[in-house]
Image 1: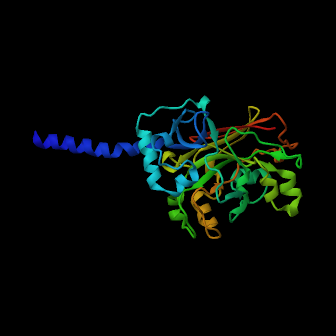
Image 2: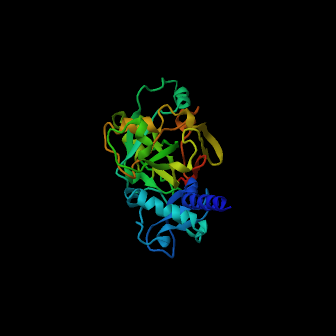
Length: 314
């Protein structure tokens, strides 16, 4: 009797020790604003499409930006886990403004031609090495912000992408160690001015990729332990409700680990850095005839388990 009682107590203690960490399966970190709050706050989205738990109200010592949160590593993540385990008030989604989950990172790294089916669409060989380019961090906007058509371009296109957010600094990172440097994943639209990407600027891609508002991100940074397999997620883009891109991240040529190993050969990766991992087929440029975004269009980019971003074109 005494032995079985001790066993029950030991089991209960073990469960109690585990329980604060179990909710991290659904950890969806956000940056948001609300009328009753001063400046941006950090929060937890209570499920895909749910309201927001104010992390800074739960623990006022937490930083108020995702960059600072990520730089502090496990210390701040453990506070977020405790907040998720507690029954905290949830702000209605209609009462908050979602910001991009990461703002002003050190860098936004992008990968071209990284879906097998996107290469087939263009009738080009699958790359043997990752094709790397970049956007300036000033291109980042929130998950429901407007995308502004620049007067300099007549050929603005959509590209739904899985975005990786770095959580730990590193250089010359081995592929086998790469996931230890990942904080999580989010949804991105790599908006692209094709006339500048392909026909101008000496065919360097940068200018066509980095106009202001050309990098909507969100709605949440979903931590890596919340996703069963980032390389087996349905990914799609809709323009005015019509599905224009539909694929799966399993089609990626170079997975997250390989990309981090490759990029970190050349540059140091810092917490908050964003890596856009490429787009599947269905972009406007390769339609017959080509289709480009116009004023009034609405672009929805969605990835399974991560959520959907919705951006009006103005």
